Structures are given as C-alpha cells and as structure tokens.
Image (cartoon, rainbow, N blue to C red; front, side):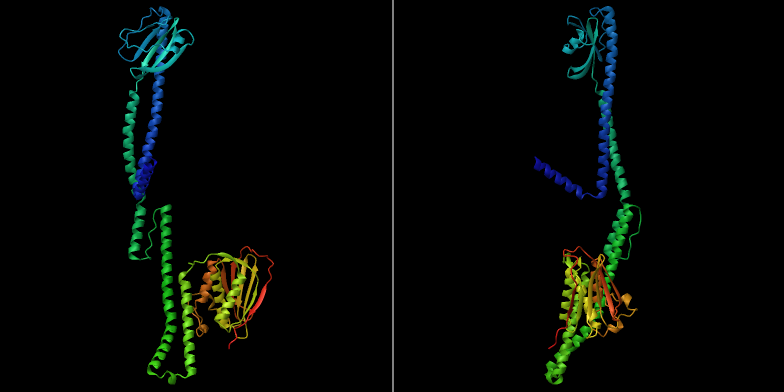
Length: 486
C-alpha cells in the first residue's frame, strides 16, 4: 500500500514539475480559493446548525411551559392535549404512576427514558435530550408539572442546513472557476515581463549579439533579474573582448619568434639538402645558430606557458592552504637560478604565513625575480626581501638596473606590454601581468616604485594568516649564487 502511495506521489511530483509557471499559478490560485470556500462552508454550517438547534430548543421550552401551566390547572389526567397537526411538534404527558397520554393520531414516541422518569418523580426540574424517531433525529424537552411531567418533542430538520450546503457548493464551484480564470489572467499579466525577457534572451542566444542589452522594465524582482542578466551580458562582452585581444596580441607576439625559428630551420634544411652544411656554416657559426634555435624554442615555450596561465584565468585545480611564504620565495629563487644561470639572488626573508596556492604564488615570485634579473647588472644581485607588516606579508624585489620610466608605470602590468627599452631583451610582456593576476586572486596588491639602488622596486602585499610556527621565527638571509659555467 505504501509502495503504491509512493509511486503516486512521485508521479504527481513529476507531473507538477512538467507544468509551466503559468499553469502552476493558476492551479495554486484555484486550490487556495477552494480551500477557503471549504473552510468557510464548514464554519458557516456549524454556526447555522448551532443557531437552528438553539432556536428549536427555545421553542420546545416555550411550548412545554404553556402545556405545564395547563396541566397545573386541569391536572395531568384531564388536561386537554393539542391535536397533532400532522408534522412538527409532538407532545406527551407522563402521569405520576409512569403511564403516558398522547394526542390521537400522533406517532408514538419512544419509551420514557430513565432520566425523563426521574424528572417526572421530582428528581430534577427539566431535561433536554435527543433520540431517534423512525431513524430521524429529534429533540425532547421534559418539564416537571403536576406531580408528573410534560414532554414536547420536535423532529430535527436538516433541510435548511442541506439547502445552505448546496448553495455554498454552487457558490464554491463558481468561486473556484472564477479564481482559476483570475489566476490565469494574473499569471499572464505578471509573467508578461518574464516572457519578454525570455524572448530577448533567446534572441541574444540565436544572434550571438552580446551588445543587445535587454530593456529594463517593471520593478522589484523583475528589474533586478533584468539587471542581473544585463550585467552577465556585460561580463560576457568583456570576456569575449579580452579573449579577442589575447588572441590578437598572442598572434602578434608569436609571429616574430616563429618567423625567426622558421628561417633558421629552413636554412639548416636547405644547406643539409645541398650537402654544404659543413662548408657553408663553420663550427662556430653552426653553434651560434643552434644556440639561437634553442633560445627561440625556450622563448616560445615560456610564452606558451604564460598564455596558458592567462587563458585559464582563475581556474585552478590547486587547493588553498596555509603556507610559509618564505619557503615559496626560496623555491622560486632556486628555480630562477636554474633557468637563468647568471642571475644572483640575495634573500632577506622572514617566515610569514599566508593562505594561498603554492604553485601560483611561486610562479608570481619567479616572474618577479626573472624580470629583475633581466635588468640587474652582473655584479649586482637581485634583492628579495620578505617581512610582516601589521596584518600583511610584504614581498619586495628590486634590481640595480635603470628602473622603469614614469610613462611606463601605468601600463607595466598590461598584457604583452613592453617598454621601448625592453624590446631588445627576451620576454613576452606577460610576466608581470601574471603576477598581478595571482596577487589579485589572493586578495593582495602589487605596486611599482624606484629602489634605493636606482632600479625598479616591485612590492607585493598579501593578507597574512595565522602562523602554526612561533611568531619570533628568525629571519633567513641567504644569497643564491649564479651557476658556475664550465
């Protein structure tokens, strides 16, 4: 039984979910009206039935008092009983010996009850009771009179209640039908902005025109929904524009190294096919050419990795954890030395704990060190300092190079932007852009200034986290020397 009920409930739920919002509102409105009409019918029926019963009891008491008065004057045995009218009131006299008198032609009443007998014997003054006459409800009122009692009965009449119920049923049906129509009209009117919004969204999806904002109309929730969709379209426009710019800038930046790489490879292939590779390219020239090819491949690999990082945006499978930023800086300095053997890094770091993604932070620090290493003279190390300032972890990377011109500072973190003085150096112009993206993702900020040595000073501030290590951890001052060349 419960399994059948469960299947019926699931079927009803599935049917409800398949209905449109307009149909749901119509059904809800009609159901609400039907419930209200049913409750009103129940309350009104109870009130009407109670009023009718009170009126019937009052009438029985009045009739009994009249008959009791006559019985007191004439005696119970001689009192004249009113003739039976054929319907309605029934009367009976209970004599002191327990016998009864009734009018001629009147239907027989049930035997006198024990409670009514006690009234006739003087145990109580009166009694109101109910019983059955020919399977119909009735009321009997017994009143003490003349050594016995008089009884007046009236058959219960459900006709007015039934007529009232029929009328309420008809009114309820009309109300339900009217409520369904009104609910349908209200749903159609209330959902008209949603219909127009849906049509506009479908039109945008078909035309791919993200510039077509949806007109703002209505108020309250509808206006907020439209504004949210317009904000989403604006975000999509910005994203598509950023993708287009990224693709255009990437194509521009890839053109030069790919062209150089293709020319050098074609030269080697052409000379090799002619069999003049050894004679046309001496060993020293061939070594320089291969070194150029290796550098160009490395530059393309770096550019591809940076483009991948930028294209992914904030999407990362790496989880956030509480880590010591000093360890991240040390690992980045070691990687920088392995990538650029001539670079020298002086570390002056203190343990500062932050919440972040280790690989992303290491990539940002590595890009800062690589950028500083391009400008720092061979005899001047890149200085990396890490300390805690209040609730922030502050990382500073500076070099002894020429510094960044004031005109270039506003654009130094733009994608593919390279100052005129940096165009002859290797790089793609994406390193600092990646730094800013990583720092922003960690709730920090990065700024550019001039260092005390005259070069560029890049300062990163990140929110510090609770340290699982002692707060008085000593500073670690080390120098990462360049790799010796053999």
